[in-house]
Length: 165
Image 1 (cartoon, one colour):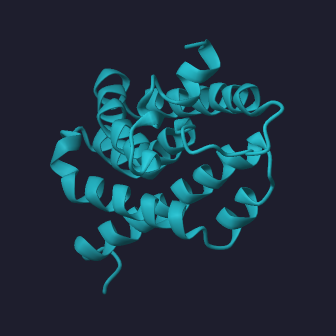
Image 2 (tube, helix red, strand yellow):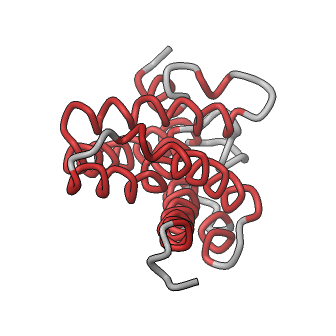
């Protein structure tokens, strides 16, 4: 496997069937936990930015001369989106100095919401997906991750009574 394929498929995870995008999202969770444990919220942000840049490059390389701008085996975009979805958890655990695993309901919500928005592709998620280029491949998952992160924050606010609901 060449470097773009290693990055784009996240070391071959994108070849797991069925539902490679779901597998990419799943593998992102323990890696996101590890990043948080090693370096907290700042390391998760840095890793997400690096994965986005490398993922964009790998997607360009993997789709050069292809009709399919978003082959299902490219799952680095799911990793980036899933990491964005767990950022509220990482930030909260980091600033409050608590074990991030204690926030397990948020992990479940982040995973479910990210998959929902990534598959459903509402509004700007669908716009990014329809771009038909490598940037769009990455951006649709970034936006889905942002939507999921907002959902996690709202769910936490409801669960903890912070929203007065």
